[in-house]
Length: 292
Image (tube, rainbow, N blue to C red; front, side, top):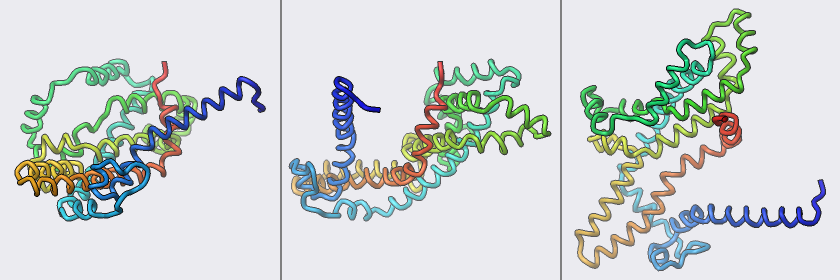
């Protein structure tokens, strides 16, 4: 299709604006990468703009000197994998069941779930409940809390109700398939896009979660990476506050050089995984979106 006159100008301006917005979005990410390889002095003085200055790995070396980071990586990966599996087991079957019009009391069950999105008991009653259940400072609380995300369940329910034909379900029943057989042999193979989106959502949520460990984990040896890195930066800042003027400057430069390495270390696994499921991501969001 050929573009003429005003249309050509419009398309050209769209490309210009899209390019500007792309650069605005990408530059902070690019800056973090080049700053992590630059000397702390150059970063503090604002010399790092387009390329690294005084290339060094001192920030990464200072970060890796802390052995608890490896423990944090281990527990973060463990919590993410187990927590995501539990999320999928609890969310996907519930969403499919609620998408079926033959489910008894379907409207009331949907309303019950919806209420939890707007009303909650608050942090203190929740902590008292978890403490009474003896789940404080346990592995279970890190993977079980928030096992069902109602919003994600609604997205999945919408996907199932709009993209899994009722005729296909009826045909499977006529052939003698049970409800579990239909779910595992027909529904799940046709739902790869929404499953990929849910895996990404749940995995990123678990990976970035430090609030749960901050509140419920007393054993620092079980802290995930995000909590370890947070504690590492805070402890370094405390050393600055307690040291003399000379050591304070040294510590300030140390934390400055560590800061960007910490961001890279915490974001790297997600950046590695995302390209493999990116092709499903947009499709899954669009076809699973709540439609008016």
